[in-house]
Image (cartoon, rainbow, N blue to C red; front, side, top):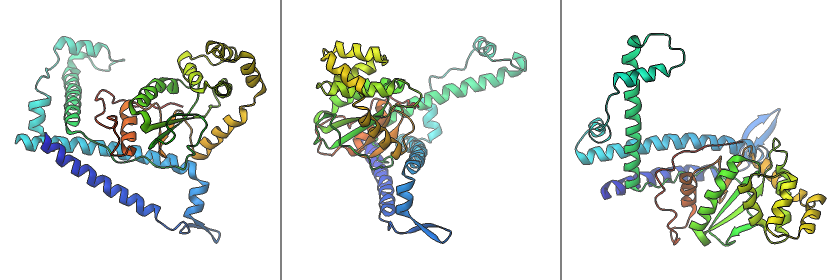
Length: 356
């Protein structure tokens, strides 16, 4: 397997180098280069990038997601071809021998149960039994193939180097968890009423511990318009910050899932804040401008969903899983880093969801 890992690393690094060179060439274009002419007026790359930054980021991220799917497919095929060559087999022979060896065809009783679960079947069971058998057989083979590839992938120590698009995000904040001199900064735009933000927060806490001084985390408020209590919750967190408990209050909101104003006051009491001072801050709206500043920055960047993240400026969005976050952090982590976090990612973390 060392042979596979070495050759595979060369292939992926070469592909990544081509991608990096392509991006570098695009970035080096003259900002005064004309991309369109409207009524005799020349529109330059600089104009385009400045005025349409938000839409461009979203378009580039969608392109990145499509590229990642293609890259993952490419990686899977490379793994199978390398392993087949090593075993002296074709890919089909390898799959039959290693992936599909334990698969059994469904019994007639199982097929009938499957048929009964169909919504309004238009043909009797005997007429479609063979079709159902083929369908179930293919489902089992697909699942077995994916499991076998996951095993090959974990053994080959694959490292993704195709990075997400970059945006000019302001990583400066009074509320930073971790070392301000860390080589990697993760900026999160989130909403305290967003269930996906609450779901990802425990994962972020684990990752912060894992990376230690190599990672700084910045939280920015992006209260969504459909969440009526989110803006006040963001203000409340900043009011807690005035008393030195920003992050404690921040984590409490995500674990409690209650952010109406009475609950915000109760949370302050739970953390033993000066209640009168907290209430005055919350009622006066003194932190509203700070929340609005974060919101406007997110809108400028083109953010439409929470949570949205930037790792050293590289953008990704949705309730990202451990695999996704580790991959992107590993791209930015210096090779000299002492953390083991950039090593293999848990093979069970394979799902990714997004929310708005």
